[in-house]
Length: 151
Image (spheres, rainbow, N blue to C red):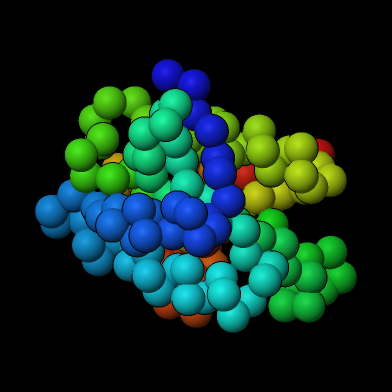
């Protein structure tokens, strides 16, 4: 498996909109349509399809926000979804590793933030394996904020 992260565009948008979490995970992540609508309104978000070769297996979204977090801003890895059909095959770990590499290339060295819905122990465990630590903060949706120290 060698994953690629391809920006959402008109050519792949419909396929990405069909991605969905596994049964019982629906409350852990906003629907992809909501994520893309948010990215359409705020161009600081970078939505990408996660591909294994030509096969779409997931979705992620990240962005840098300076105004909301002065003076240095925050780099948010805000969404990570592996489609239900591809879960349990190692794509989550591989996608997270690839996203962290991508963020390191696209942005200067800095801490990375993300949030996890309370009760999503699988996601919290995955992020912990990569060095993310719960900060004690809550985001605007009352999700737990995690931080990975970089740079």
